Image (cartoon, rainbow, N blue to C red):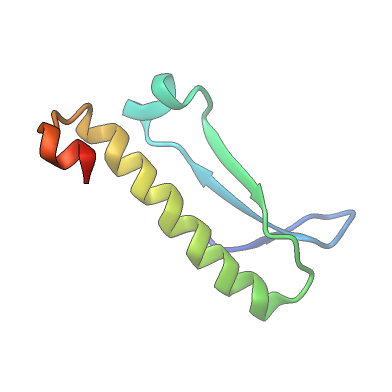
Length: 76
C-alpha cells in the first residue's frame, strides 16, 4: 500500500501509486500522481486514503471493461 510522500521543495504531500501493468496502456501512464494540497501529515493521511480509494475504484472499473446496461438501469 502506498503512503503520502512529501515533495522535497514545497513540503506539500502527494499521492504516488504505480499503475498495474495490465492497465498502463488504458490509463496512458505508469504512475498516478496527485497533490494532497496540504503540509499537515495527519490531514495528508486522510486525504490520501480517500484519493487512493477513488483511484482503486476507477482501476477496478477499467479492469472489468464495458458493462452492458439495460434501458431501465441507464435511466436510473
